[in-house]
Image (cartoon, rainbow, N blue to C red; front, side):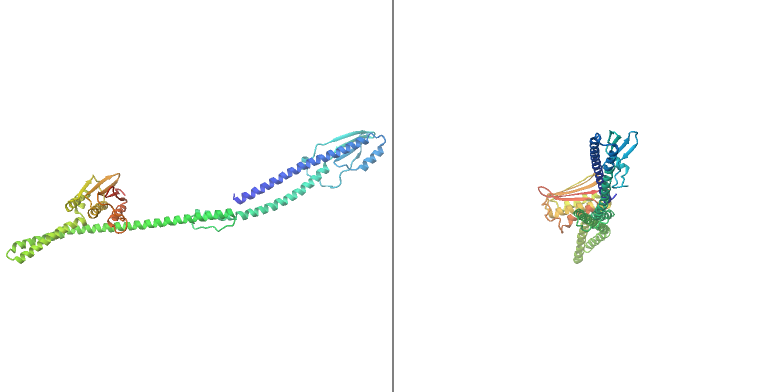
Length: 444
């Protein structure tokens, strides 16, 4: 049931209760009025005839003439019976409102207790009985007028109340429709302004709510779209890295197998030419220059191959590739102590293997080039279904702006970890140095 119907029913019920209470009060007042009138009329008639009957001067015909002249007495019926019991006189009824008889239920409710008096006269027996019919008719007339007035007030009052309630609750129907629309996902729904305080307050709160929801949904949608773009960018970056690693692998293999053998052959031929051209100094010096240049080219090529793609990473695995890289770093930087602690590692995919190797390579390279460290500790363990990498040094620590553009090495470490679903934490050590901790899940 709607609020409007409930209010209308409540007002109608209260009005009906008021009218019923008014009727009850009227009945009670009419009952008291009829009782007073009946008692007064009976008392007057009783006192009159009580004083009249003992008068011996009143004979039978004179007494009857007196009764006839007396006529109707209010709220009283007078009867005279002769000595044989026959009724010789009955007071006439009230003729003021003939036919206006009240309903029986009303007469029963307002009628007082019957009163009876009788006197012995020389002519017979005089009886005086209470007769509230006239007073009851008067009360009923008043009740009818009151009912008519109450009905008019009831109808007009309820029509007015129904109209006012309809006018006052009309905004709530629009508010209810707005709530239904919001429930169905129409977050752009707005309510108009209402001049009534309650409806206006609800409308303003509703509009603030829908705007907040819409803003939150838009922000969430933008966040989802940004996340999707980030995922696509990461996938693209991952694909690019994979292609780069494939190219590096191919180039490293080509340098090792083809170019390396060619350079070795050139050096061998040059040395053979040196031995054969002992008598020709110019040819011997040229051949020696070719042999020396080939040796330098071969050494530079072998230094380049681990940076491109360590061949041991494919043949021996991550642990041995790191050991080989650490050995090379120790050889190149003998003054710096580099410690490697590699625990027992499970089988990991090629992508994770390359990523971990590059993370360690980048972290150590940064420490060697920029930190001025005397010691670098590398720890690689597998626990809690994740691969944990830690590279710590005792150098000068992180620069204040390391998270800004330009520090591609450190940012690359973070991005490589995130692409694999992991996380990287880079922070300063106390009292000095830098620590890089990376966690990469083994199963994605």
